[in-house]
Length: 359
Image 1: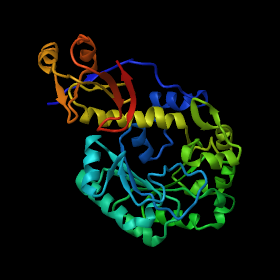
Image 2: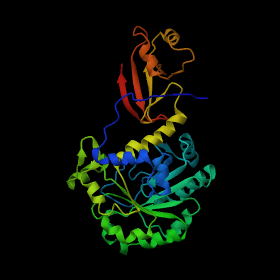
Image 3: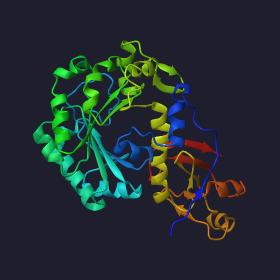
Image 4: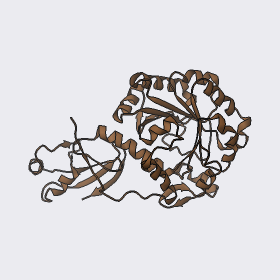
């Protein structure tokens, strides 16, 4: 069976935004009681993120989607592009997923695809595999009937321009219909001004999530036009976003999710689950859930290099002629053997490279 080493404290923790620390402390102590079932699994990093399509019929100025995904009909399971339910299931198995969050774009634009993928996930993992779905729309009864066999929780995010007249919109009717049909129902929106308009709707909901507004490359220009800026250079959280959440935060059904929590707790826990199932024997798993390994050009010294490694050590020969190996062992190999060497830190399962350290 595969084995790996867990690396602790190899480098300082990434900088945290002071205004967001409460989210981390809360996550370490216990899971808050007012969370939906879907959020409880997200706290554990146990949900597959199924990006079902980048297509959307909205033009929200705060949309964080990258050019790779925005208005493009692509499917991602976590960070891996997929085309079939079977490929999504493979990604879910790699992280031992206990559930799936379906997002976009606007998933209801490809509702047949949503049903196909979610039905396959439920069939493979069982009915206890919890599935929640985000939508910017107020789903019709026809939409809800299609989703009913394979989705457990509906999260609606009304666009900001509709907040002031939310009680006159289609959302209250859609929420009532979803509740009658057995869904857990909530609203999830960014922390913008005007959250107080949702007060009359809270009693009809199971939960209400506020996500701290974040600076992003995709929406940076729109934020500059509105004179919004990050709290500090080390944090993507927007100045004033916590204050705006305070318009409604404090109600027992409301949960405020900080940007630092999403990055430093939720993402990290998901990466750890993936790393534990996908790391090679010589990959080291960091506190962040990334993996680290060494890359070395052996030149003509491969046999000598291998003789200097501990018995039973693993390494992998790559197509470009380099070898990948335990980075700590690589550092002990005398400089007179081999050529260029470096340490790589990346997301697990062949994910994006976080850092390259030349030696």
